[in-house]
Image (cartoon, rainbow, N blue to C red; front, side, top):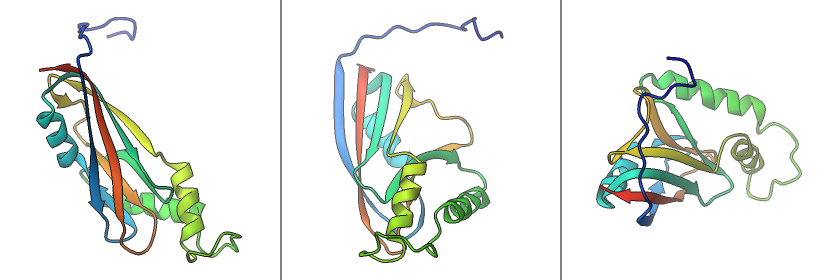
Length: 154
């Protein structure tokens, strides 16, 4: 179908703003799949059609939507980020350890917020997509992700 044609257009008013803070315990550098927790929040707030915003409240962790089928994709992404912001550089900011400044750079290269459309109470993620928090520090951390749904109730 050409990009100028739409299969259908849905119109919904905004009557709901629902928010929560999701506490995420990481095990150190790597990806944490948030998809089930995010979908549970959307269901709990009675979402119909709208938009879900996610925001991580940290400067050394980030958010992404990535492939959920093959874990080697996430391994390769971590390798790429390590190459872009290695610990072996003589960073000026090093008071919290050699992984701190690279973590800030990795966060700057990725995202601190995401938006996911919600239709009929479902996250409109693709078949192979999942929502992840990326921990950029070597040691475990407790991270907070703000979730906010804006839209119509089901």
